[in-house]
Length: 201
Ligand code: VGL
Ligand code: ZN
Image (cartoon, rainbow, N blue to C red; front, side):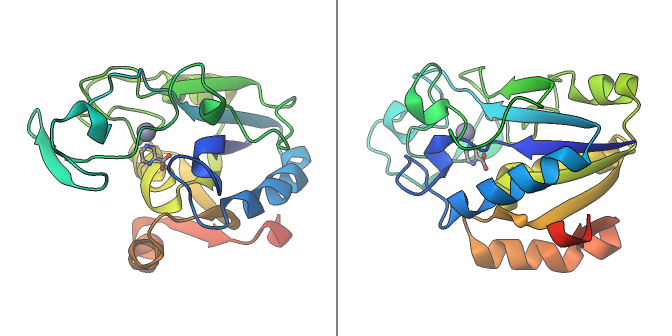
């Protein structure tokens, strides 16, 4: 069974948001168009407390996009984004969230970041997404959302490891760093990820 996974389609990742992805809003109509083609749709939501250690403001003298080591893991320091309960953490208001059956929140532990919708960056704590999808009978996961090179990418990597067939809807995602994403794209077919356009669904 095919399931649509909408990754972090939140206001802070849209143009004008705290951690904006260029042309991020262009994915919204594409997501709305593909939604009816899926029997199951779920979303992930970046959901940080204000004291999250991925925020540069929580490190004395650091600037946005600087890299540090946090509990032994490389960590980019981001502008404060997707703070629990704020407008920026909400889904884009034009996305039809009605058919979305479940929302998996991530990034709540202030000590560790969580790019993937399945596990934190230390691969220690699970959100339960893999078990949920398996119990629902999903075999093929179709990914969309933001940002292509970060949370979409790491969620797809974990999906492969969890044994799902992984597909990326290329016109329903946008990258924070386009050149990083192009490098990732070149490795997709060898990893077993199929990239397709929404028109092929
Ligand atoms: C994301 C950086 C920090 C994303 C989330 O959704 O791609 N990127 N938190
Ligand atoms: Zn985040």
